Structure formats: C-alpha cells, structure tokens
Figure (tube, rainbow, N blue to C red):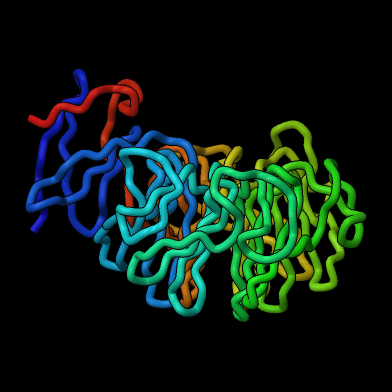
Length: 368
C-alpha cells in the first residue's frame, strides 16, 4: 500500500507517494523508514550506475559519499558509506567511508568496484557490504604502476570490469587509462601527456578521460571531450565527436559534434550507448554505423516515459546495462533513474516528482 506524507520546504509544499517508484527532487530523496517516509538531503552533482546479474541497480552518490542499491521492485537501501562525513575507512556498511565516489562497476560474483575519486583509490564492496581498499592509498595521489597498494592514482572518475575480472580505470587526474589485473598488478594501458592524440599506448594522449566501458572482446571506450576507442593491443583512436557549436548532428568521427559525452555502456552485440548530457539524449554507436540518437528528443528537457523517440531526459549521466539488455540511465540534474527496455520502451525506476519554484537542495527541510 502506498504511503502518503507531506513535507514543507520553506514554502514549497510537496505531496509524495511512495511505492515501486521512489521520489527524489531538487536534492531531497524520500525513503520509507520504519513505516514513514523520511527526507534525506541529496545535493545534485554527479551520480553513477551499475547493475548486477540479478537486476539490482547500484548508485554512487558522490555528494553524500554513499553507495546505494535498488532492488528490481524499487526498494532502496544504503550498501556502504556514511552520508554524515567523508573519509577513507574500510569496514562493513556504514562503518566504511568514501570521498566523492564517482564511478561503479560490478563483476560476475556481485562485487562492486568504486572509483573513490578524492581518495585517489579503487575500493571493493562485497555482496555483503564489506568495503576494502583494493588499489592505491587513500589520500595519496600520484602516478605509479605496480602492486595494488604501491600503485598510485589521481582522481579516478571511471571504472569498468571485464568478464575475466580485470578492472579498467579512467585515471582522470593523470590523464591515463589504467588496468588492474585479476592477479593484482596495476599497469598503464594508454596515455602519457595532455591532449587528444591518437596512437598506441604511451604515444596516445587524453585530455580528461572520465567514463569508461569494456566490450566482450576487450575493446575499451572512453569519454574524453570526444569519444575514444582503445583496441586490445592498446591502439587509441577517436571515433566520434569534436568540439563545436550546439548541434544535433550525428555521424562518424568529426561529423558528430556539439555534444557532451558522459556515461557509457556497451552491450554484447558491440553497440555502444553514450549519454549526451548537453543535449538531453542517449546516443548509440552500432558496429559499422555512425553515431545516432537512440532515446530522447534533442535539446528537449524532461522526464516523460514512452517509446524511445518520444521520451525525454534531463542531463543523462551514468548508465549501465542489465543481463536482459535493458539500459539504465541516471539524470545528473535531479538523480532520476530511467530504464530503457530492450524493446525501446522508457520507464522510470526512481523519479523526481516534487514541483518547486526554486531548487530545494539548499533549503532546510521541515517534516509536517
């Protein structure tokens, strides 16, 4: 049975209905706690998603320094982290601490890997919620390959894991792509300097690598102002996107421009999905074809469900695919989580439903 609660936000009166669809808006999320909805402050900034084999969705809340999980029937809980403060502590559940976690990946065993950005480290969360530091040393930035704890990262913002358990990291501050083998060795896959130079290994350069995805054949895809591809042999090529004026133009290479690539996901057929945050659409790059709009209406903001062509999004960011081919997309602007089925139907898993005259994120919340 749906719960109904009212909360006053300095003049903004909101009526919330909870159930399979949770509600979040303007920095406030409502979670059923002890039979009543309770507001939790969630400043809007950056979110990331991952989905495990059972369809559970994981969300990195960089502002509150927590990792949440959402079951297929819409029940949200905190998996790990403490929203009251940042930190680097290992431990179980809320005993652990993060510092601006900005990316997630899940392996076949259900372990969640976190790019703990401001801790300059890679963290691991077991299915039971136990957090350990996998690679790097929290609080110590740097650029060093080697054994897990000896390695150094600099504000990593992207992470992906392949079917063999190898982890790939967009080491944003170092402008490198790193690899952590299942045996626990950290190496550099590509990059050496600042730029957008294509090439092999250290001959290539990145400007600001953020999101990263790995295909079944080991090919990596990276957002870096443009869209880059790294072959299993380490060859970096620019496959779509250039800087330029706002445009809806699709196509190959430099023919696609005026966009802002954000989250990435790649399916078992090699189709690459790209969140275009600037233009409020999700694009797709199919093998042998050019970049095209997959879901959403170009430059139309919103949260409307429906078929892919008529649905709307609001600054889509992190993305993840489930085992059935459904694509999950999170709005960076309001934290809503959308689901695009394999047949192209858009629905809402976690929605912003409060209508205010101003942003609620900076306004004290007063339960009535």
